[in-house]
Image 1 (tube, rainbow, N blue to C red):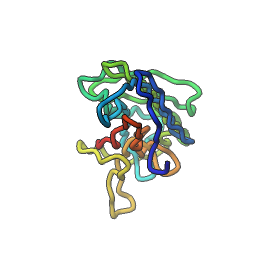
Image 2 (spheres, helix red, strand yellow):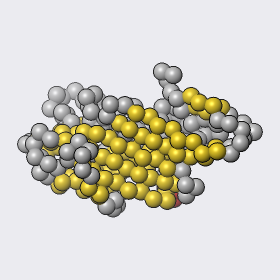
Image 3 (cartoon, rainbow, N blue to C red):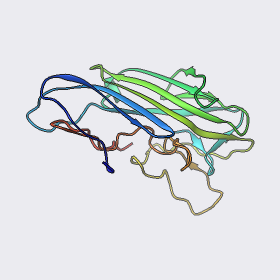
Image 4 (tube, one colour):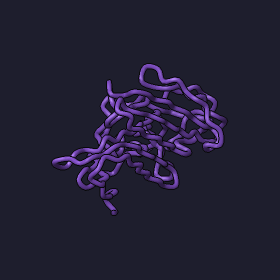
Amino acid sequence: MADGLQFTAVADKARYTVASVSTEIRATWSFESARTDGEQALPLSVVRFTPALSERSTSKARASVAVPVTVRGAAAGRNLASLRVYYSTDSGKHWQRATVQAGGIRVTNPAAGRTVSFKAEASDRRGNTVVQTIKDAYRTAQTHTGIPRSTKAPGAGTPAASRTRRDAPRTSSGSAPSSTPAQRDAGTPRGGKATPSRAPSAPTW
């Protein structure tokens, strides 16, 4: 479907794995579903990366930068059981684990003209999981002007901000520009729907 994912769940208890794949973003969800009296939201989660990027979606080369990390959906808040985050400076050929502290990670950017990719593995307290990979989330450049991420993040699929000045930087919404996914909502489920269970609409973050 153009507006989301649809599938039929069997009446008996079973575990399902749903994967959404594009050229730049890969997300796989694993969860359980069983018979219900009516429609129920599926226990899906997403992990969002929101680095401060320039208007051209770049970050300063060879700099150590903070990248806020947010978990939304079933594993949000106290429901989060585990979270592992990795980043890559060679388009995902090699991954380096990053420690999540105070709601974010630190990334050491590579030389100018290269990219940074992200990967996250999260689970909630009921064992439902999500694995996300964002290839080439943003590029690096010799010069960079960025702004801190707003504490009030935009809704899924909404640009972080509109600005009138061409040189005004903007905050990414978790992915890079049209050619890269880091300024779109990374791995956000697009209203996946099941019968009799269905996925919730994309969370607002």
